[in-house]
Length: 336
Image 1 (tube, rainbow, N blue to C red):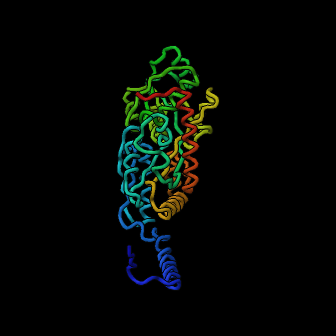
Image 2 (cartoon, one colour; image 1 turned 90 degrees about the vertical axis):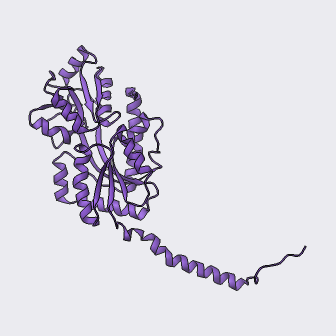
Image 3 (cartoon, rainbow, N blue to C red; image 1 turned 30 degrees about the vertical axis):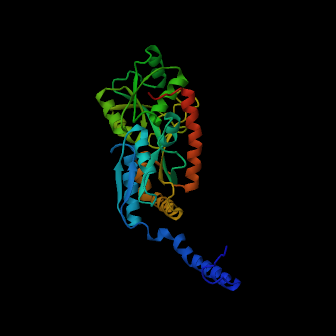
C-alpha cells in the first residue's frame, strides 16, 4: 500500500517559526483578556432581591445601588423575586449568563437553605461567584401591643404556661428570624408557633394588626414602629448591643446565655463570571461603602457596613454553612 503526504513536509525551522508566531499571538491577545472589565459595564445591571419591596434587603439595596450607579455609569435595576426563603431568586441567578450584568443580594438565608431544603435546584457554593460582604444587621425580638410580657423573663414564663399559644412571625420559612425563634424555643424550653410571611414589611403589618404577638426581625424594619410605641423591644439577638438601640439588652444579657444570631447581606454573581469583573465589582462596592454619606445613611437603619474581598466572602459563607447546619440540626427545624 502506498501512502501519500499531502503538502510539503515541514522543516524544523518552520516548526520553530510557527511556535514563535503562536507565542507572539498569545502575548498580544493576553492583555485584552486580562482587562476585559475595562469595557464593563456598557448596559444596565440587574440586581435580584429575594424578598419584596419594603424589607431589610430593599432598605440596603436602594442606597447601595444608587451609589454604585453613580460610580459605574449604568443603572442598577432592582428585580424583586420573593419566595421559598430566597431560593427562587438564587435559582434565577444560577441560570443567568455570567457576564456581570445579573447579580443578587443574598441574606444569611443563603447559607441556611442547604440545611433546610434537601433538593435545592443549585449548588450554594459551586454555582455562585462571591463578590463582597456588604453589611451585618442585628435582629430584634419585639412584641406587639397585645403581648402581655414586658421583658424576656416574662415572655419565657408566659410561653411555658401556654405552650404553642404565642405566635411569632418571620420573613419566611428558614430565614434567620424563623431560626432565631426556633433556637429561642430550644434554648429556653418553650414552644411558640411560627407564622411565615413573604417579607419583613408583611411581618410588621401583621404585628400592628395583632395577627401575631412576637417577631425576631431585622432591626431596620421594626425599629420605626418601636420608636412610635406601636411595638415593644425586648432584646437583640446579636452577641453585642446594637448601635441603633443601645438601651435594648442582648438575649444573653436578658437571660438566654450564649444566644448569638446576626443577619448579613452580600453580593454574588453567577459562577463563571470573569474574575476581573468580579474584582472590579468588589472594589467598587468597597469604595461606595467607604463613603461617609452612605455609611451614615445605612447605619441610621441599623446596618453595620462591611465590604470584603471575594475570597473573604467565600470563607464567610463556608463558615456560615457549617454554623447554620448545627443550628438547624440542634433545633430540629424541618420545613413541611
